[in-house]
Image (cartoon, rainbow, N blue to C red; front, side, top):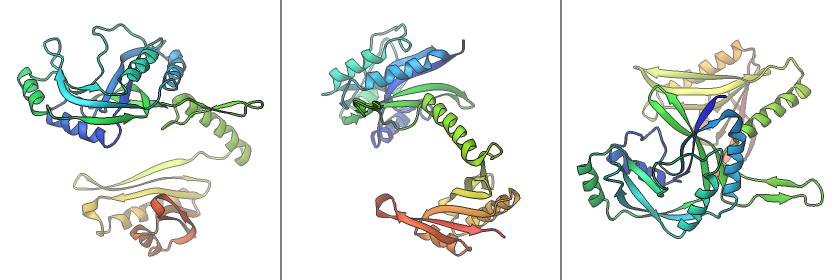
Amino acid sequence: MPRRRLGVALLLPPPFDREVDALRRACDDGALGRIPSHLTLVPPVNVREDAITDALRVLREAASSVEPLTLQLGPPATFLPNSPTLFLRVSGPGEEQLGKLRDRVFIPPLERPLTWPFVPHVTLADDMAPARIAAAVEALAGYRALVRFERVHLLEESKTASGRVWDPIADAAFARAAVVGRGGIELELTVSERPDEAVAAFAQREWDAYRVEVLGRDARDEEPFAIVARRGGHIAGVAEGWTQGGVAYLRELIVAAELRSQGVGSKLLAAFESLAAERDCRRLAVRTYRNQAYGFYVSRGWVDEAAWDWKHGREMVQLRRDLS
């Protein structure tokens, strides 16, 4: 049975993730960019493919048993002489709840043998020269950050060209699940940042059945596209979206800031329209704020189709253009 390499951690929320990443960069942390700044609860563990659902259940149940945690990060310390690691200490009012959370996720299938006892910390650098560690501990002695954590994450390791990378694949909020419909169809409602793979598989399966029911068995799936413009080997802009059923939807058109107003966007838009025509699309669609981008599309023959209030009080507009 195949196994997957998983871990459980508290990922630092903004803006503390960027702040700690800056400290990691200053310390030449080799894992920066491959592992997000985090507090480990379960170190890497190999989990059988058929136990992933159990791992997700453990994550949800553990998260529902605690409230949001407020923890202090800092000052820095080290595990020398046992390990040349520089890290931020973890303490604060949520430390007791953190211990309970850790105990509740450190059970099968996420349990594993440990070389060292659990010490909550946020790593700044591994395999650092002892002299540099001593200097960093002294230089950063005044660093403190009070951070509120509202969810826990399940991460998975994957192999890429740049090395081993850890990405979150599921999360669970620190809150009891809401139960509605008592006395009838009783449901447990939870909120997460993203659907886990079991939820995503359910949604895809049910959507495929619904699509066939509504559009027929011969209806084609969305055909995605990404049109990339490069200049001198560097990315100048990109247009992404999908086509389906005679409609081409432009999800985003982005041009490098230093190359705007030089025609890059116009060329990408023209390429998108040509691709739409090649795929037998009769209608083009895009959504944007009523700003400079809106004027860009209107000047090229796009017209308003709908508008509504959106984020931060800004108006969102849906535009269309029909191809003859």
